[in-house]
Amino acid sequence: MNFLVTSCQLPVTSCQLSVASAPPRATGNRQPATLLFALFTLLLATTAFAQATDYRDIKTPPLRAFNPPTAKRIQLDNGMVIFLM
Image (cartoon, rainbow, N blue to C red; front, side):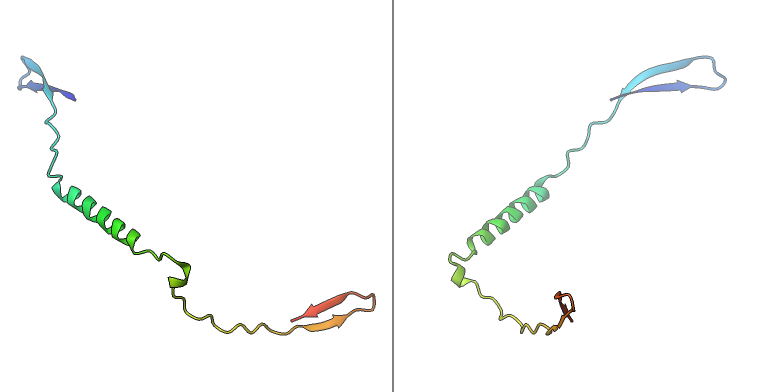
């Protein structure tokens, strides 16, 4: 990317125009990012090997008791049945 640079002195008798380029972008040190990516990949790979091979190997807690409320059965004069909670 180029920039137009002007340099003028007061009183304005002459001006100089020059083209300056932007400084190169710093690439920085990419070693920490590479190391972090490698550790993350290793973490995902180790969890893939920790999977159960059979469904019976998976331990689940017992289910809590299920006690549904009982409904009151009402039959209307026209024969329609209604269940009220």
